[in-house]
Length: 307
Length: 281
Image 1 (tube, each protein chain N blue to C red):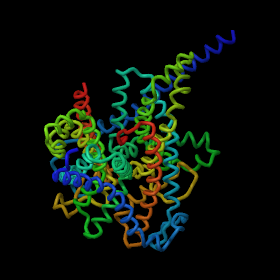
Image 2 (spheres, rainbow over the protein chains, first blue to last red; image 1 turned 45 degrees about the horizontal axis):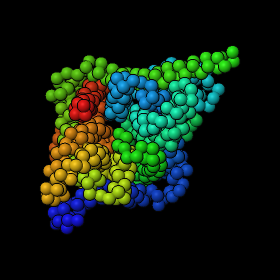
Image 3 (cartoon, each protein chain N blue to C red; image 1 turned 45 degrees about the vertical axis):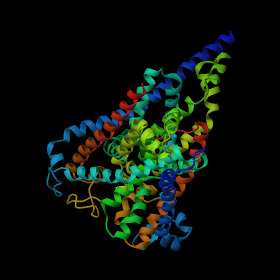
Image 4 (cartoon, one colour; image 1 turned 90 degrees about the horizontal axis):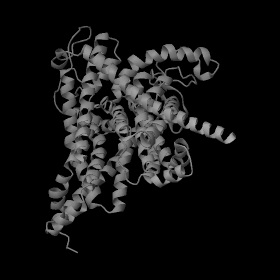
């Protein structure tokens, strides 16, 4: 063993310092947000989560409609995105020949790279009118007996937000599921085919069960992204603060509420309430991302950040 | 008889499911085509020289452009890079060359979690950390917010690029008697340049389009770029403001800005991927 040199020691500690900075930033996020949220936490306590009012004039703030909107729009997004993503991933990993899967993967990654504000712009001017007219009108007149599809078709609202979120998380879930499926050993596939299974039976019988936890991780990672997605959702959700089962209704998510009101907020309590909202979102995404990371990591030893 | 019927069903359900999977991939690409198609067609229609070379006109007057906001975006990305590159690279070196497996997994995990923090929350953090104490929206606070988004991306891609450098090179360098830190800077880093540049460019492309963390840090400015401690405009911020405005002239400019931003962001992505693909072959 060579004796450690001074230069090496200094360099190593320097890299350690910058690496620890990442941990420090995470910790700093928690501490700083808590400090600035404190006036609101102190005043409202746990009732902040369960209250439905948001009245800057009377200084009464509650998070329930925003939490509801966040969960509802993400749920709609996942319901649409999961089957499309998993099927696309199966196509890329199991079916398509190399000359086809490479460009298709590339295009799907391009979809992930489009800035969210541009997807929002497209959503607002192209998708929302389309959702208002054929889609919501059709749903209203044919499935109007369900509480989800009642009320006037606004276009902007939970349904549009959910569809926009689906478009944004499809490339993420697809890319990670593709990697997870590709990591399944070829022997698993060969054994199933040798038993006389068709290609599809091989996929459902050998590939999918083998990487189930990784696929769940991919979906949860998509959920984490959907929960925190801001710009595109803010532009198509209509920014109204209410609790309603109707998917046609304009609503708000935590992120959209913070984005649309933060720069106008006056007073410590108003600002504190918005920061508390951000803190709630931070907590939710933190838990979701940690679970997802652990699941995906176990399937593909050490892989990229999934971006 | 029964058996061949069963086989017939199996064969056809096989084909059906395979076709469905292909359709799903086609749907995904159709979304990309729709978004890009509308952005390019609308953008080209409303794009002109004034858009690049003129400042914004007051409400009610037509014409004008986004000169200041384009400039602002470059400045913000510049500030973010200046902060994030050293931090990200050093953290990447730590992960790949210095840390033991346990320390590495803690840092790696933190970096991945930081990368997953919604960008709006990073914006709130930068507001609480810089805007509030300084009593002013500023280019600096927005640059810091974008840097916080860049750091984990740069760190992880730098780490992976350096891991790909073969161990024999490390051993050869050390066998010559040079110290470890010179081995890292003189052998590992040059060997991993393509990978590191790829990661940095992708991170730049990502933050160039970020909007949420700018709303209450950069704020936007009608007076152009005035300094690091003053509010500043940015292209994505202006897309957001103009898209939600009731003036059709502004909405047209939002499309033109979106066109420019898409060219910038996807351009970087495409070039980077082509280069790293060439390198692999």
